[in-house]
Image 1 (tube, protein in one colour):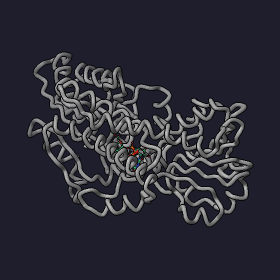
Image 2 (image 1 turned 90 degrees about the vertical axis):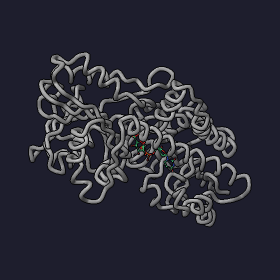
Image 3 (image 1 turned 180 degrees about the vertical axis):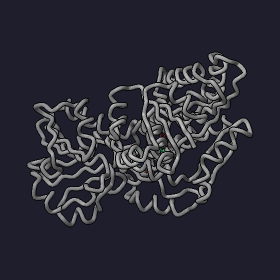
Image 4 (image 1 turned 180 degrees about the horizontal axis):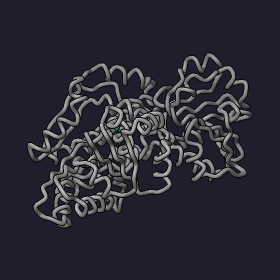
Length: 437
Ligand code: UGA
């Protein structure tokens, strides 16, 4: 099929590349010229495992093209995915100006039937506004169109795998024609047994916000249990395992730590609270989820102070700056608050991350108290403490003997529970983690 994708952010770019890779012809519209220039050369502007290779393969085989002209995208195909940004606006509400702008521009260049599909995360009933906007700006009111919602559930760091192996495909449609097109589009997936759920657009929009908020709530819940574990001497991993075997609960997203970050959960939880508020409902459960999450960073800093006493002039190595492993994304990462506070306190910080250093330097440039060693072990030379803020595999596989030898004091404060307390103790580390005494 021919497909147009508007917006080459995380979701748009992965959607475009994956649809091309399964044999569709794709045009992807991106208006930021620096991004477009990279994309045309087959270079992904974001770090996502496998994405650059996939882009290059599909450019070479002629299945994907990039342009900054939305009218070219609209002319190219009847199936148009809206994947533009929906950042956090005033009061935590989603800023939908890019959705409005794209809808208007599509309407102005439409000459024949189009199916406009929201893939960006949007508040419930945004499809009504998209419809209204297209109707208002369309040149010829006889041209038919449909608006559908098809939320995306991929995670950064495993985006291609998630797109290609979805737990479910949600399609919110209002006409038989739109339903048929969506079923045809996702046939390669449903043929492999991936479930496709057809709903109304408003249910599809809600499913996305409700899912992200639920997962965020699960994380805050387990983090509270971790605090209780510390008080009573239980191990949070044992508790999470015991809970997780219950199929109704599940083990995923029960990893305690310094809380969730990223471009989705913090923004989506806030937006969902606002959506409920706009409909006269107080989503106290989510306000608490957010509050617990925010307090994780402060709590971790308090723990550092309890252990090190004075941070000033201490050499502190930090492993992990990205908000999660396998990405260079630092948006809303706990590392920003933790490094920021330790910097204010006058610690000498040696910051290491396998992929996120360049992004982090834009917030914390190299200086007297901040350095970026090129290797994780180099960060440890004469260190008074090692903080672990992201659970990259290369940290889990690190040589513990080497770590101990390099550090001035063998103090490890682990915000992601990547090592075993017993083993660390045996090796002579002073090891602190979350929810494990
Ligand atoms: C999240 C959702 O998982 C995706 O389904 C969704 O499509 C995406 O948001 C989105 O809306 O675009 P993502 O933000 O990429 O994906 O990353 P997650 O793997 O969900 O992790 C989010 C945060 O939660 C990270 O900071 C991670 O460290 C934290 N987390 C996750 C925990 O603290 N504990 C856990 O058990 C799991």
